[in-house]
Each structure stands twice: as structure tokens, then as C-alpha cells.
Amino acid sequence: MKNKASEKIAGGKLVRVEVDFSDKVDFIKITGDFFMHPETVIDDIEKSLLSMSASSNENEIKDRIDRVLNQNNVTLYGVTSADIARVAKTALSGGQQ
Image 1 (tube, rainbow, N blue to C red):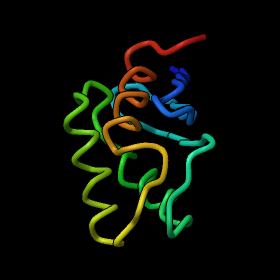
Image 2 (cartoon, rainbow, N blue to C red):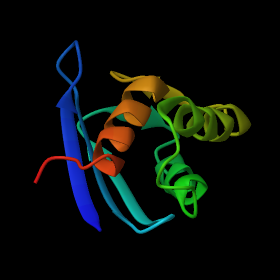
Image 3 (cartoon, helix red, strand yellow):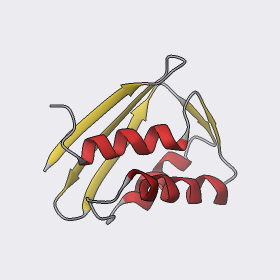
């Protein structure tokens, strides 16, 4: 199943998540107008969410994101890991067509 979700975060930044999944996440793409340093870690975040159960809750998603952020000393600007996790969960829960 393919879904997508987006949310304008307080402060004006946009987070978009596209997913393709059945029981597990087969594809995920996180985009938006937020920033992170180093930028390339977004690929690692997406990889960390692959094969995750599609029924994972928001905290489980956030924990995976935080693990990657902490391992790579990443700074997020304009969003939090909780924001990204919330949008990802929305996409996994039916999303916005």
C-alpha cells in the first residue's frame, strides 16, 4: 500500500513522508523544507525505518530516528524527531491521498 502524509510544523516548516508497505515498510522517503546537519543522514534515517512493522507506534518510530541522530551527532533545524515520527505514523495509518 502506498500512502503519503505531510504536516506544517509549528514555526512554519513542512515535513512530508511517502511510504510503501504491506506488513513491513518496503520504501520510505522523508522530505520537506527543514534542515539537518549533516544532510546525508536523512538516508540513514530512512534505512533505519525500512523493514519496520507497519503497525509500529509513533514512539517506536521516534526511537529509531533518535538512534540514528545520536549515532551521527545530527542537529535538526525547524523540526524534531517527534515531528517526523508523527508524520510517518500518519502515512502508515492511511495517510492523505
